[in-house]
Figure (tube, helix red, strand yellow):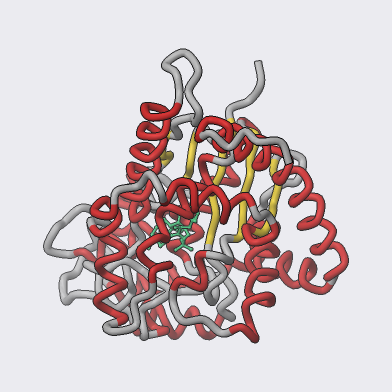
Length: 336
Ligand code: TYM
């Protein structure tokens, strides 16, 4: 029996932070041998907010290199760049024409980003989830491993697929496959270091709110030292009055590889003065191998380019087949 297929992606906007790693990439790595995997760098999504053309290509290489540095294995996975495959944009147009506008206006991320951008909201920001649906549906993905914040976009993807199948397919021969979200409980929502009720995010103006995967040890130490805590002694999970405590303990648990019970026992009598150095040390140690591997991958641009070139070839073949299937279902059947 052939393996189920996974597709996921990350935007090349700035550095990756612990939320991206613990909510998404770490889970890709852990599950990769059980699936056929496609991981893209979604550089078309990156221009839905104001971007810098001078750094887009470099940021795209950075993310691809980080995939490898975090442990994505090319034996199991194909890594590619979204803009290299024109089928992503083309399918987006076809999906646009069957997606009701109000579905997009209801998206939480759109509303949040639109508020932040004031007057400067472009059509691409509204259309972001349709492009994401195209990314997923092109590869007939069975599972999509993401953080909690992407759940609504995955529901939309399924709704779009159902709508296409209903309007243009036959029950025994659907046009598109319905993907399932794959969201792990622990790490699905890593919170800001400055406010345990807000998610850790690339767009937070404060650098102190997040730890980036490429932060040097002294920066990590500084960020953890300055992270928000509370005056209570003894550290516990799951206290709704102590969101920062829950978040920092969860980071420690995930980065140390210990179980929740082990961490709960270890930290129940600790104060912050004892815990913060422990979390600092654990974070630095967990990120060290990623940073070392990243450096070596980035030093060999020819290798990275070859990874992305062969990724493109493999991904494009599948994407074009699906695009052809959708176009045929929609009535584009004239010979060219
Ligand atoms: P991006 O780049 O914003 O986020 C990449 C991944 O990181 C997860 N994530 C988090 N997980 C836990 N805690 C956090 N604080 C946190 N912040 C971010 C996101 O859930 C995501 O899994 N729209 C996608 C990119 C995308 C995509 C796709 C994903 C485009 N096409 C197709 C899957 C399939 C996004 O938010 O990227």
